[in-house]
Image (tube, rainbow, N blue to C red):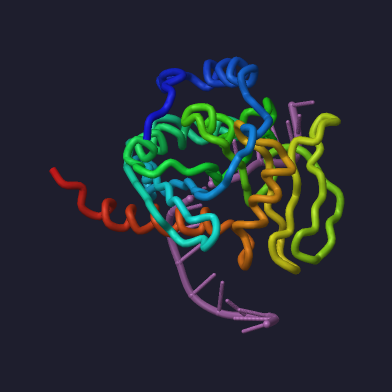
Length: 231
DNA sequence: GCGACAG
DNA sequence: ATCTTGTCGC
């Protein structure tokens, strides 16, 4: 798939923060007119012990059946450390390669991390959505910033995530009696649509089917490519 | 200075 | 994220 190389990746954490502030100005928090979601995809990465290589994968599902219709994967050397708030600079280089290999364009891409629920409102999902020019959603397993009130135990219960007096996302119970996931819009997306879509692709388990498929793919790819790096 | 901190 | 045994519940 084609994408928009907005910038290079040889950055220091300081430069990365400055870049996020620039990109934030061009983020679009509104879905395209008449967005039709026929294909939803999930992106994820896995890395080896020594944290040298990153294995990325994207799985595209039919939005109706939630069955895979396409997928792609790639591996790249990690070039950026894990710094809370700068996760996209560690994960996106691999996902860019994966995106290039992908031959079916999804209508929406769901990332395993935050969207606008980020200190500078430019989490992994926002950054990735802008790079790929695709509507995107952030669905994380834990909070990076913000707080939320209690939510009901029933599936579908919601609670706004507030940070610095601003609603930046939603805690969403995708399964009865299980911890919620944290949803926030990425790019070309808004919070209500993001929440509705995450619930639609998470009919049975805590995490979206997109994320589950992508997670299994990257772990399999790592298992195959980790042991014996071919000379 | 102290505590928090996606994956 | 990764490492890792046992344990609780449907």
